[in-house]
Image (cartoon, rainbow, N blue to C red; front, side):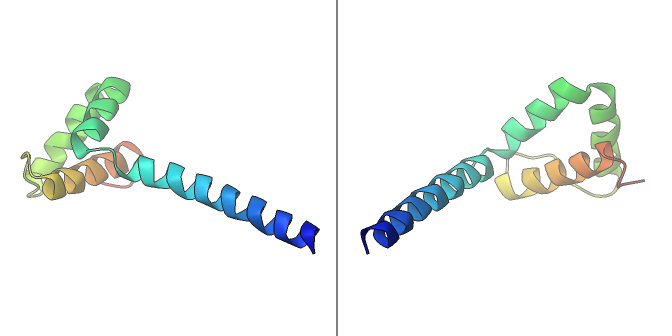
Length: 82
């Protein structure tokens, strides 16, 4: 019985730590994501950001709109947008 409880406690702790890491990654701001991609991809980032604007995306300080632009730019850098 103790072995079962110990195993359950360990499984709970592992699940909580994985969920905490995933949540921390989701809480990065769109601005942080954009700055990271800009630093890593340079010209490709600028080209993809221009493509996003030409397709109607709005570069603003609104977190929701900025996150949409970041996701578009990320897909573009990976070659999923043309």
